[in-house]
Image (tube, rainbow, N blue to C red):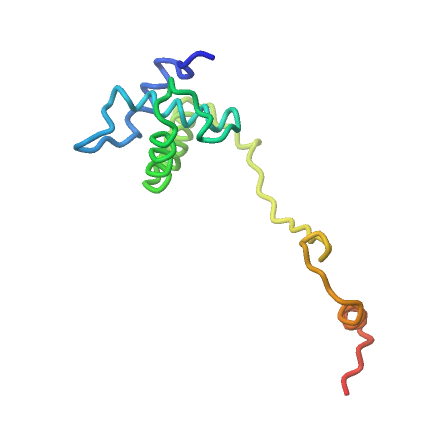
Amino acid sequence: MTRVQLTDEEWEFIGPYLPTGEYGPYPERLLQQFEGVIWRFRTGGQWREMPMEFGAWSTGHNRFRQWRDAGVFKALLEGLIAEAAKRGEVDLSLVSIDSTTARAHDDAAGTHMGEDVLTTLEKAAAGRLVHG
């Protein structure tokens, strides 16, 4: 596996979205750490499995959490959308909003009920429950 996952052009776009503090991360380490985050989500591997070429796994994990909490990924996504719109590359036919809700049976959700409770609920649902 090669360490370089981003092209220079991609890095030029992404780099400004990644914050640097007074004490780090140092700009030359940002690319390494960001690519470690990319590796984690591309492979589905665990943080502890991250190759050392991306730095310590704990640093990658901590940096990811800091960026997540600071809204870096949201800002990056919004920046990508804005850049695509500026180029005329936004295709709204790919946007889908779906409010469908599919309810699972109680057993699928891990709910376990006694037979008497289940019978009472079924009668209530069918409108046959007599209050008295």
